[in-house]
Amino acid sequence: MHVADGLGRAVGRDVGPVGAFDLDRREVAEAVARLAAAKRPIILGGRGVLWSGSRDAVIKLADRCGALLSNTLPARGLFHDHPFGLGITGSYFTSLGREMYESADVVLAVGTSLSYYVGHRAFFPKACKIQLDDAPRGLRDGQAAADLYIRSDALVGVEAILAGLDNKLGAGKPTAAAIRSKELAHRIATEPADSEAFDIEPGVLDPRAVVEAIDKVVPKDWDVVVGGGHQAYFPAQMRGRPAERYTTVREFGAVGNGLCYALGVAAARRQGRDGKIVLFEGDGGLLFHIQELETLKRQGYRILICAMNDGGYGSEFHKLRADGIDDHLAVFGRPPLEAIARGFGLRGHEIRDLSVIPKLFADFAAQGTSELWNIQISDQVTAPVIRQTIKRGHGNM
Image 1: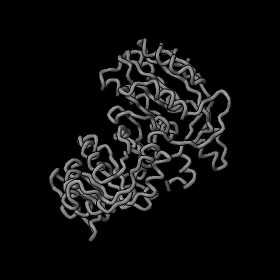
Image 2: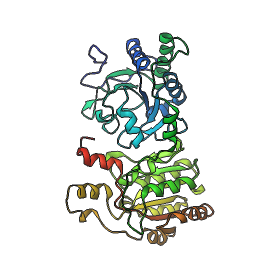
Image 3: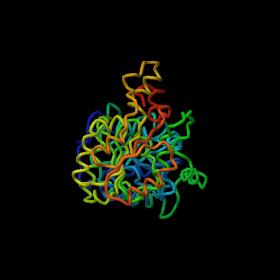
Image 4: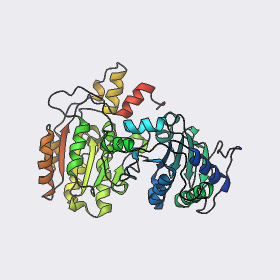
């Protein structure tokens, strides 16, 4: 049952699932009015957009109301080819994405549950949040998920809002939006996700530069699998890759399952032997299930494993250092992961120089065995998500 106050806000409990055509006209009308008057609107898409096949309709709505587009982490790449696609919303923000959300006045979230890591009020300090979902929640992770709720299938709800805008304003008549510009499109296309400066010690690499180099050589139609932990932020910012080819591990914030997920993707795609899968995993996470390298060998799957090796559990030692606490239990050195891979009958290389990546990738693509790159990255580079956690305190993203 839909429990709401006089403004259409769900109160105190879940609102149950709904059929595709069971729309509340008052809720749609309020969303239309909010979007028509918004000067800095953003539309946020989640996996519900991907699964319902409503991506094109969401883009059409964004273009109609002059909104920017963004996506949740599990739907990374949902709007990768749109000039006003900001990328990931929430704790994995780019610098520009965070800047745009801090000034947004309306955020329409379609097909996402608006968890703590996506919908925290700190991300949308000035915005009215509208949630369009087939099972919206009044509360999510102990906080109000949105200000207005529309229970609907993603495609049906988006099309209803589109029709409502034309009815209210007249076909083709602009809304009040003024957030899009040529300058912003240029910034989206050219600015790095994070440009914070760090002192990189000799013999190790900046993980942001590593991902950029790998992004340039790995074809866009490959599956990208990303394990958990501190390293996960960096490959999440790869450009021009569709959501259908991205798999991430976020359950409980745990590390260690990336290799298992990559094996699953290889089996599900029935292309494991074609070698069109790249896995990004931390050194600590990889060690959790490194015995699965034997499975890779036995099954004959061909996966490129990029082990982002910072010598320890990055999420932990960055926080410990920030608090002035001894970090030695979170630091275990830099084991020769490439040698371990070779011990299982696979190929392995240590990487300390970005210039070798194009040649190594060409060599990998030309043969039929899984390969592990033990990439030595700096333990000084702290991902923005961890910097924000340190700044605000965990639990106050």
